[in-house]
Image (tube, rainbow, N blue to C red; front, side, top):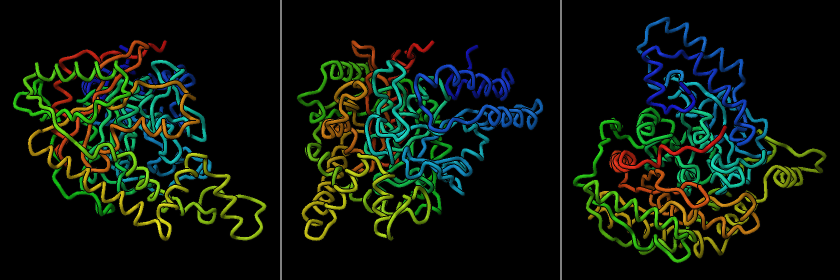
Length: 488
């Protein structure tokens, strides 16, 4: 049995039955890391072999043959390196935090620890989650397991690549404008961005606080339901987390979509979309009809303004959030400075990468005197219109189905010198964050270059069970989720 190929649900079943031990699981994934990780470079800080094995041996001693276990016990889970882990480096893919070791756990990590999960490593990302290709990391790019010449998506590219390459059983990522869903589409795995407020953001290093959300990257929809159940819920340490009961998402999964109304927004099938992407998504919609879903065309008219609004709001919030990295309290500090002002300037100049500097400057300009109302204020007004579009659409449909990206994954280096083209990679995901609604991405095809294509399913706020049901029904009716990259 190849343990590394199993999903969370199946591996946990084997462990609970006593078919395999925690030590056997840890050993299998450690061997996989040894042979595959150098090709993919999904991790910034992989857990050391001796640490993994010591943890696993402790779990086996604790159980001593008694097999009533928790859903995540002994499960090797990867964590995006912008989520704080006590005693383990959290770099955000930036030189400015290269040696930062948090003194506390993020709430989601505390909930995983309560389940006795196995931290297999901290995954690579675009610096401070600012990017769509995981090429902006100060520690080098991650590669797509389907073809190492291509990007894995971003900013959670390390997490998506680790799941796709069987370097972990599941992973956590963060999503500010598509950073879970876009890499999930590129790597042929399942990416879930919950409703804003469904999962605590405490301990997530902030990029844009009104948009950021922690979510899951898994091998299938069932695994996403399991992991979301563990990390979701009210947190007194995060005032934006919702005080709502967390459903049992597994119970919502059905193999049909009978009675579900599916909306297809005409604005998401635009000029310039790769024909193979449109063909795959249209075929997925036809499959949903066979699953007894009622499909209708809808309109989200302000979609065309989402990119412009996002790239004013997100950089503005980033400009404010990243002001704390001043070389005084923690993180990198420039040397040989002459005075306080020069120390600030040199620290930020040397510590931040080009994309982070670009977004800080955009945000600072948008918030400056005389421009605040003209730029940031108007962008927030457009955000309200986008949210109303979704509210109107959900009066007649249960879920909305769209492409995830206008193209499959592109080559490493292809768009690094054209930021606008890079930003357009997120054109179909950004409006979801602006509206604060949940969305899940599942594989729906493979391009002629043998690169995955993803289908995005969007739901009403706090109705993750509906999008998971639709995704599960589609997944069970097709074989895309079973296709894996060829990594020998």
